[in-house]
Length: 216
Length: 202
Image (cartoon, rainbow over all chains, first blue to last red; front, side, top):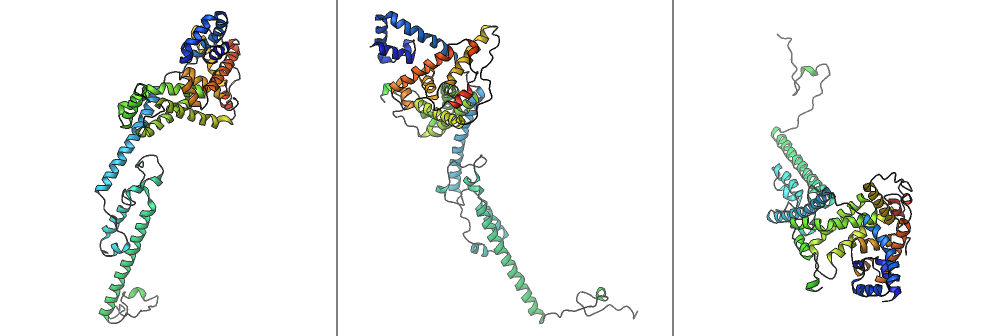
């Protein structure tokens, strides 16, 4: 131990031997004992600052802060448990949605099928592969919608628009078939009847037979 | 790390990885006071320090399941996380205008010992906040957090010699600031000083 090293230690760590580097403590104390006057001058100066430092106190944490921190931990754990439960549920209930509009066209009479298809398309776990879903996503949490599998409106809109297109086509086909069968039954298309404005109110919708009450 | 030098937090972190609510409470009780004290002394602002503490604990909850006992102690890692968060905030505020606080607080009359103690507390905190940030970091880690010189130097990424140099300059600056009479105290929170002294030390 040298005078320079003694001074360096006291300048850096103060006058309290407990704060001196452990492996040098004995040597520093021995040097101070041998050079009492020089050591005391340095130690007294350092002790003045040491007396100030404990005054920079920090109040204990607010219990509300501890509760918020604990709540965040439990929320995170709940998120992960929820994700796990969701994954397991998806495995059990895996039921592929119709792959194309042709699936719907095979059963045109069933409007329920279309609704069911649309519902399927928005159910978690059915619109993309399981491994493609982030594990942290969970409904009801403040996360971006892009991370929520059940919040993918583009895919759902696609199903609805396809279903509407197919439905309109089927309705048009049925109406056309009904018109053709009626035409064949009557043999000829009806001739349009042009009625003057003043007699229009006296003719029926089938035309040609004006109501004549003059003979009575 | 030998068995006798086992990380004292290792068992608790392992329980935390299993989402044990009791471990959550135990870790908060064990770490929050020190973590908050570190952030308050580094930032000079309790509200911001509480935000840092919350963010640091969030990192714990996120990383605990993957924590593996290794060379670095959990407490050292946690200090590093908290210091990084503090530096992020200090950098963010570095170029912002200083708070409109009076340059010198009026300590007013000190009728009793309690007010005098509060005045001394304010003076020390102001003097700490006025230190260049690396000097403050060295003093906070070694003196207030009671980390060894090797641990503090490792956390700061410097040698023990460099740490001792920072500590000596920090103490010299503090002594100069605290040497005057009470009315010479700078503003009580020292917040504006904290925000403007991030990189002016060496």
